Structure formats: structure tokens, C-alpha cells
Image 1: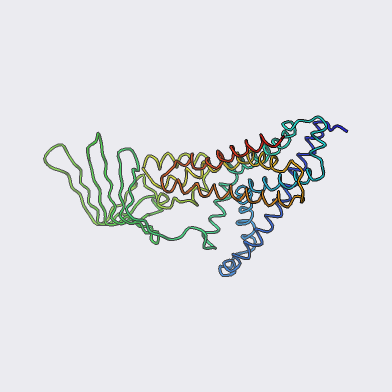
Image 2: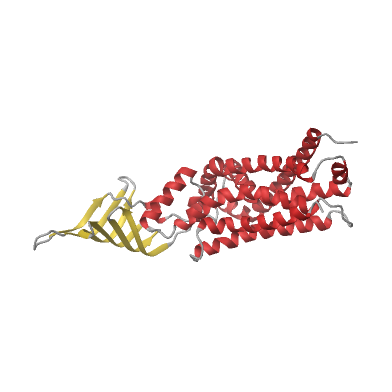
Length: 364
């Protein structure tokens, strides 16, 4: 009996998407159980309301988890149900019915497209907002949020021709110590502001300077000098600029992320790597769905002795290797060896080659 392509498409897509959703739901349930066990002490210690735990944390945690591990579940899903189809001789029946191997891949890729589109939508529009609530919850109730820290020797170009230097910034009191602001025009220093300390004042969205000294350089022989004990000032340096890290960029939308990258590049801020990694990760993960789908079908479409156990173990191993490779690539950015774009796309490039070889050999 020859399977009609439309029936075949619906059959494979139903198996793909149904198995993927079941695997995802089971994994989410297990992760939530383990996460509760890990954080229960923090919840009890801080007397966190049950409503807040559910709606402020876990409702926002689930999209983050789905997106982070969707390539893993796609790979395992395709490995699992395609191995079963091969074991039941369904793949042989499909190919014997006149459907080519390339044609058989159409419903697989269509399903991968749906999942990739969902992942991309979550990445660009849903997860940044949900991450904001999740990170806020972690900051308030767990040890995984922001930590109080100090930074030393900070150099920023906060605007064209304006350069700021902070010897030490303390997050305990939101104070910058030994602050210097220089203004340069046409390659010449025109003014320099120095202060023993600068404390953030949220009421005016500016800084409260103590023991300040301002020198305005003139073309003549005399410079204008001003000094005092206290001065309030508003400059293009915000408190949030000192807190930009890997977690904060997860809460930004695409436009906010691009704006942050432009600002940090202009300032020469080394923390721009976090935003660049996040921007490229949001694109690489959905794209990997297609690569891993092709690899999984190529590995499992042939009937083998011993059932699906070997294929499933191989699939889990390769999928975890991809996630590990993706994390390892970030180290190239931190060390300055590669750009964020190249480092984050490198695992996909490598796996594209592997997938192409496996797909070429699979029909044989």
C-alpha cells in the first residue's frame, strides 16, 4: 500500500510535535520538582508567598527553560520516534512506496520550522520580559540573583568627547570613588571634573558629588578653577551602567539589546560581550533545530538490531555535546579570541558539516 505524501506529512508531523510536547512537559515537571527541592530553604527563610512562587517565578521560569533546552528535546524527540518507526519497518515501507528520502524529510523540516519559529518568538518577545520578573524574584529571594560587588578602574566614554574614570564603584552604597570626567573637543582637553566620591541620587536621576574640583582649560594663560564640598550633577552615566552583566542582558528586548550594544561599543565597555553573546544566542538556538533534526533522522532512519536504546543514548550524548560546545564557545568571547557572532555560531557551523555528511550517507 502506497502512502500518499499528504497523509505521510500529517503522520510524521503528528508524531514529531506530539512526542516533543510530551517530552517537554515531562522534563518541565521534573525540573520544577528538582528546582523546588533546591530552593525550598530560601523560600521558607524569606517567607515567600505561594502565589509569588508560582506566578512570579515558575510561570516565567518555564519559557526560559523551554528555550534553553529546546534543541536538546528536538534531537531526543526525533531520535526516539524515528528509531521506533525504523524498528517497526515503517521507514522501509515509506521508501518502498515511492517516497524519496528527501521527500520524507519535508514533514520533519516543517515540524522543525514550527518549533524554531516558536523558539525565535519566545527569544525576541516573551522571554526578555519573563526574565525580568524571574531575575527580580531571584534577586529578592534566592542566592542566584545579583550580588553586591565592587568594581575597580572603570573607563567609559559616556558620550562623544566625554570620558569618565572611576577608581572604585561600591554596590553596597551605590557610590563611585575617585571619579574623573574629562571633556575633549577637537582633540584638546577643555574641562576636567574630579570628585572624591559620587553617590547615585534616584530622586534627580543624577549624582551627588563630594569634594569636587573643576578646571576649565582656556586658550589664554589662565584656567578657570572651581571647587567645593557638594555638587549635584546629571551626566550620561547611570547607575544601571555599573550593573550590566550576563543576567541583565537576558531581560532586554531586541531593540533594547541593540541600543545597549551601540552604547557600550561607543563607551569601550568590556561588558558589551555579554550583550553580544545574548544577541547571537537568541538566533543560534532556533536555527540549531533544523541541524539537529537532520542529524537525528540520518542517524536513526535505518533499522538496527538491539532496538532504540543505542540510538537514544547516542542522541542524548550528541545533544548534550552540542549544548556543551555552545557554552564552551562563550569562553572564546571572554578571552577575546573570537567575536561573539563567530563564537556563538561556531557550534552550528561544525554541526552543519556533520549533519551534511550523515545526511549524504543515510540513503545508502
